[in-house]
Amino acid sequence: MKTEIIPASEIRSALNILRSGGIVAFPTDTVYGLGALAFNNDAINSIYLAKNRPIEKAIPILIGDLSDLEKVADNTPDMAIRFAARFWPGPLTCIVPKKQTLPLAVSATSTVAVRIPNHADALALLRAAGPMAVTSANISGGANPTSAQEVYEQLNGRIPLILDGGTTPGGVPSTLVDCTGHIPVILREGPISLDELVAALK
Image: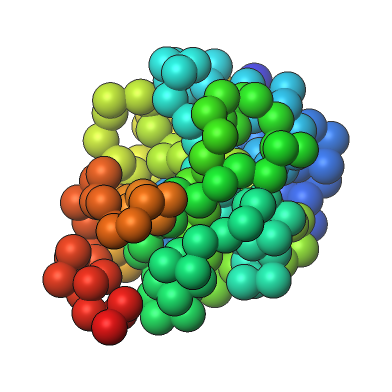
């Protein structure tokens, strides 16, 4: 497979690949992500293959607008809604009850991780494509890529397209918080601290 790099503004090529069941890499506010349409089980499985990602690791969902949350989540907890209002778009991923129509390849559990990235190129793609299953565009366990070239160095020949939006501003994966209990539980440290989350609930 030939891996092509094109400007991130040229999303039509990416949409064509996604809608035909393919996967693409693109910049976000944290690191470069590798994504597929959220409701295409086979395409999501391609992400696992391209990354050598363990199949038991769930893949987060990125959305372009808060109104898309109801497409991928059921009975969203008030905690998650308040976090979304305060921190989205931004580097916070919320674990919420999963919409049962989501494929098993996204998550084999009853929950799904969701966020809205604060990046113009990512938002343009997500608003055109709809919800996407997205994880970091690297070989599993490899360095998190912050440029199209770093994605290419790890995934050349494994994916068809990289959207080049320059260097990502964050460089650190998002904070991952479980919103399904009575209190927020951080499962992965990131740019947003527990103190900030607790303050948003007051």
